[in-house]
Image (tube, rainbow, N blue to C red; front, side, top):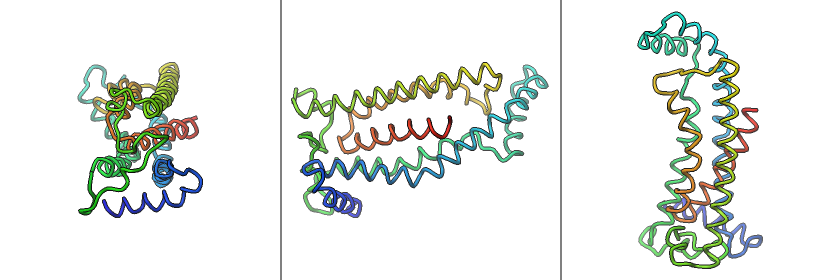
Length: 234
């Protein structure tokens, strides 16, 4: 973790002439963008996988007609079809899973008072007066003025991105239903698909309870995802 702390400090030093006291916050945003750039090839692969799965829907519809109410036989046939066509129904989860280590590193980094036996100097950094190690629930609960406005701004941004993602997902799902290509591809995936759009709003809770540094990662990554999906899945 000390190596990661040194990386954040070095990025903050590079950005200090431009962002001054908020240089560490800018470094976290830049670090998040770099992580998303590294994961972007996998996101593109996930988009291709979704198009491939959509192309299989007519054949899956035929399997439904063939197997009728025999759900076990249908599910087995669908899985065999995906294996035959080398299409993974869960490939879209990989980009998100690979980002978790970076998030947890930031979380622990700005939750620890010491790093390598020394005081954690990163906790001295702030964003417009809001400590990067502070949490929204604590700041808003204490009625802190300037710091509270930072969190309120983050909440508004997250809510806007979540609403954009929710509405876009609803439109995409509705279009799939109308075209007759919407269907359950693997056992339980249909239920997950229905719940997934609402998970965008869970980021509001995350931003409120994690350190501000980790919240910045979540906000930046969520906004990146919304733009990325709008481009890749258009």
